[in-house]
Image 1 (cartoon, one colour):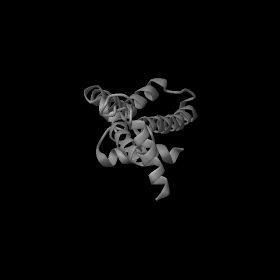
Image 2 (spheres, one colour; image 1 turned 180 degrees about the vertical axis):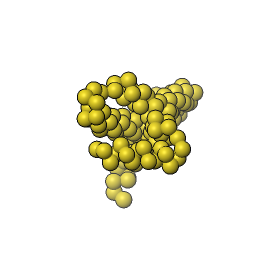
Image 3 (tube, one colour; image 1 turned 135 degrees about the horizontal axis):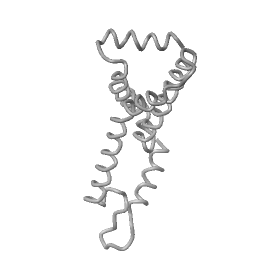
Image 4 (cartoon, helix red, strand yellow; image 1 turned 30 degrees about the vertical axis):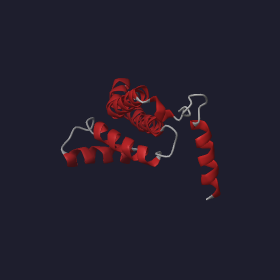
Length: 139
């Protein structure tokens, strides 16, 4: 665990940045990497945010153990601050993406797959999706 803390300190010194500040770019970078890795999921940004939150929890757990061994206490305020710095920008990105998707659906409801046939009698989007799914599974 000491190596983990020392490696973070060395990286901060190398970049000439405060160790707390490193949470912002690394949180965003890790979020983008996770979003690419989970791009085939139904909700890749939410899954990526959840994974990032889990990884940040592990990071803070290691930091908490380190603090406990050094001082006998845990710096809860620093843990909350680090978590906010790590997850803040990715959370904003997810909120903005959700708002943009909702606006697109409100502006153009025919993109949801619930289009009507030309006579306006029955929805045909679901039937087309079923057909496409059967066609893809054969190839």
